[in-house]
Length: 358
Image: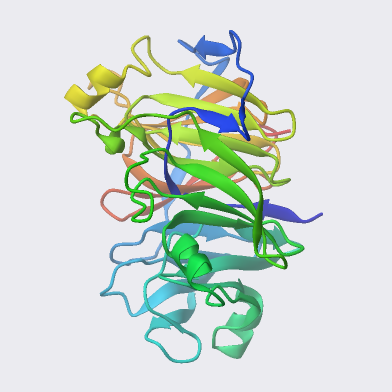
């Protein structure tokens, strides 16, 4: 089976409208005070890998990849053997030559199946291609299997350059998210997705946000968050960093579900005054959505990080808690492990009950 997963991708959120019709969410909002199950992740070890400023981690059955977006990093990807964590190769140097990139965007989609790993690589402003990591490791250089040409016309170039993220739906179909920092639509602070047909070079459908008028005290950072897409590319989970809320969308049924993680979650006025980061990255596996959370620290509890687990429909399942303050993570549903990078750049492996996800 082909699993499409993703890493985090920055987005701004208020309230979506699908086409010209609002997503149905009548009374479909819930405050979750306690999850059905809470698990403290104390069975752990650190990996014998020492690196500076990693900004992502992902694994296949045989490989571990660390991502580096820093301009000072020699390679955008460093690949290690999973069985012993020995370094294999660095991939994607900075530059404008063959197999090089200029400015790596956040990797938010990949395809892992039967031990193979393929990553959707984006480099600002226009480069996007699928990287075959296994073949690249064997060849000691980047091997791209599918490249996209976004330079055919000016409108396309602007759309791609301003997009906060892109998902490849295959068959020359894309989902493109417009950023609120758009230069071409600076009077409209509302982001939106579009379904785009590359063959016809047309937008086939749009998922708009409700019209929000920019005011003098408007602060788009309050709507900062990350988006996770389900493996079938039919569901979204949006982690709203400052509003302490998670939104689940079913793009087929055109429904929305809102999960609030505190009684004051979603309050724009309080969020603007506090500007506290409650939530981190959202991600998904074939069965679940995950969201990173930073609770108020209590020395009596000793918990710095939580990873909330939801079913694909947004139903809460498990609250994984950690002593460490984590920044990036990867959940391996098959092995029952969580790999994570903390604020001190240590890389952790947390061992779970292998049956926890089944």
